[in-house]
Structures are given as structure tokens and as C-alpha cells.
Image (cartoon, rainbow, N blue to C red; front, side, top):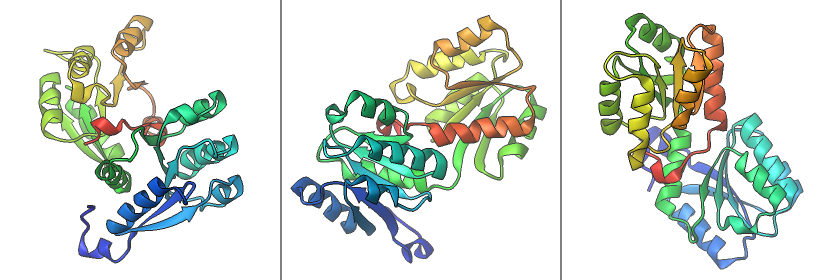
Length: 261
């Protein structure tokens, strides 16, 4: 169950469910959501109905089925990327055509392949999306850069700072983080080695990591991406450009529900 403060309890979380609502499995899902004090609004699978959903950061649960037209997926993708809608895909992806699958993969969303869906994981995903400030860990041995980055990001994010790779590895074990901004060159343990060690641990296999570095040569970039970094930002870029890269990342990032914290 989603635990809310007294202020939050005054307003129920609102979710639009796009599905064939006569199906028993969909009715059971709606019943469970309502049982957790969710305000459920049922939307049919027709393109027109989905297209007229509010262009806001709303929650949209989509039950995958052959009844959904490819245009529905296009609309959902646009609402996620342009309006910040939170999408949750439920069900077997085998029902998707090749064209639909391409749109599906390009849509920022939580994806639940099992039916019936684990309601606790779905509620956890909703809470993650409703958290207004994502948590960013900045790792750099330069104290001035750490202060600057925090000043640039503090209004929109919860920003934490450590000055070594060893401290970064210890921090993420103890604290849930949504994104790591990782320096490339550091004494003791450099950024690529930190990322390599993260990727060797199952709980951090998909931990979002963006390198923030002064190195722009091809060899360094290739080494950084070898262990599946999510991006590469030069420290020399203007502050606003760095902020934009991070905002765009969270807008497009597709979350791995199994590693959600």
C-alpha cells in the first residue's frame, strides 16, 4: 500500500487504465488499485479516447493486447516524451507487431511482463514517479566542481557528493540513487573502474551512470562506454547544457523495475 502524509491523503493518486475492461484480469487489477486508494479512470483501447487524455504528467497503465492500434502506442510515446506522462506497460510483449515494438522500446516507461502484475511493484513504480526530486550522486575529487554541480542542480534534484570512487561504491550500497554523475580521472580508483565494479553486482547492473569529464579523446569515450555508461558530458560545457542533458535523461530513461529502489 502507498503510505502518504495527512496532506497527501486528501487527494488520491489518479490513474488512467487503457484496456479491454471486460476482461477478468483487468477487473482484478482495477479492484486492487482501488483497494490501495487509487482513483482509477477506465479508458478504452480506441485511439481517439487515448488521444484525448490530458496532456499532463498523468499516470497511464496500459494493458498490452492485440486490440491496441499502433497509433495508440504513438500517442503514448508522445505523451511521455512531450508531456511527462508516466507510462506502465503490463502484459506479454509478444502481442506487439514489429512497428509497435519499436515505438514501445522508444517510450519511457515501466514494463511488467508477468500477468497478473505484482501490485506492490506497480505501486512502487508509481511512488518513484511521484517523487518530485530524483536523487543524484556526484563523484569527483575536485571540491570546487562538486560545489558548482550541487549549486546548478539543487533546485530540481536531491544532490549528494563524494570525492572518491571508493566512497561512491560504499554510498550506493547504503542509499538509493537515481543517477550517478561520475568523474573519469580520480586518484585511487578512476571512473571506468568504478563503473566496472558496479556492473559486476546484480543490483547495480542497470544503475544509471553518466560520465562528467574533461577527457574527450576517442579512446577515453570508448573505454567509458565499454561498461554501459548512460552518457558522457564534458565538464567544459556551459552549466545550462549540463542541466539540460540531465533533464533529458530522466525524461527518456526507461526504468528497470527489478532494480528499482
